[in-house]
Image (cartoon, rainbow, N blue to C red; front, side, top):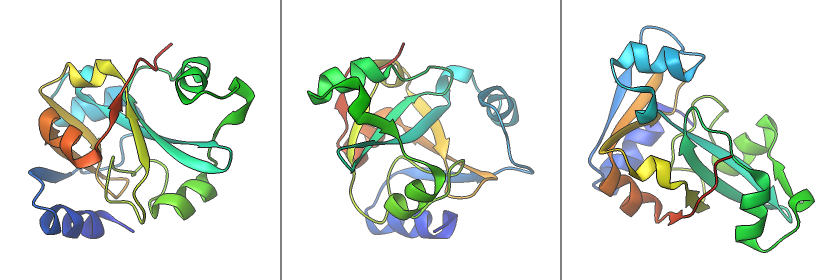
Length: 155
């Protein structure tokens, strides 16, 4: 899937979000923030973990690292049960490649968790479906679209 599929999802579900095309792929949060002329705290990342074979999507601030111990405790499992999904698994579970994955619009609805650092922002920018695209969305719209559970997940 790509940004066109994401745009179709946005349109179909009447989500107030904009896909922004960038001149090139931004490899870091800092690069993305510079390209968009925004603060680094406004850049989010969508990460897929596997817990007992089930995908869990975590939306976190782009500079923060997910604390797998906190994630495991929230999910009521041992830390060793929480694993990052590899790129092929992410593609299979979401339809998007790593580095382009939006926080919604996947091939199936994923249970979604969000760190409180993300909700402190009024507007955020996340994966736009292609490696050279970002999606701009207001926080209240993102929470509604993802139905995310907000819990402390950062290191």
